[in-house]
Length: 75
Image (cartoon, rainbow, N blue to C red; front, side, top):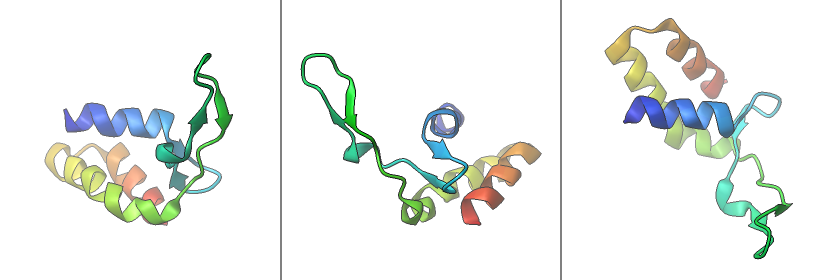
């Protein structure tokens, strides 16, 4: 379950150019169409809340990709 969650976050919320995850609570959507009106802001300060999951998964799996992601998040 944790792997699925962090893989989803990496694929959908990580913004390489800003080195942070989108704060999806900042998204404003049209009530009728569901289209995003105001984009979610990237909040690198949230990285410290998220990075332990990536580090934990790397520690458990030994998969170097998660070590790389952990390092990017911490950068």
